[in-house]
Image (cartoon, rainbow, N blue to C red; front, side):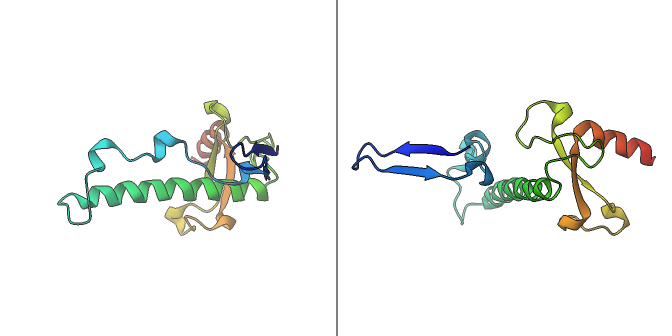
Length: 132
């Protein structure tokens, strides 16, 4: 859905944001720097903690981007049950997960989109139980 913002300071310009859901957005709580890391700088003895935090945030963004790409490739359908996949849901049973078609342990690529499929949390559990 398109959203609209009217600039109250300027001359009433209207700015349209087309498909804002295409942009990966982290909520403020997950992206804010913890209090204990705010005073750390490049020469601080615990600078590695800040780097680890940055790496974690980068990975979060990359996973969201990857899920969105796989979701689009699959036309928003689960490859296991053919049900609709919602990318932003809080219902655990419907949460989408990335499944590696060829397991990493067997030489499958960890992040190549051709080796990934997006499936529901419950479908992912069933798929792994069936493989046992």
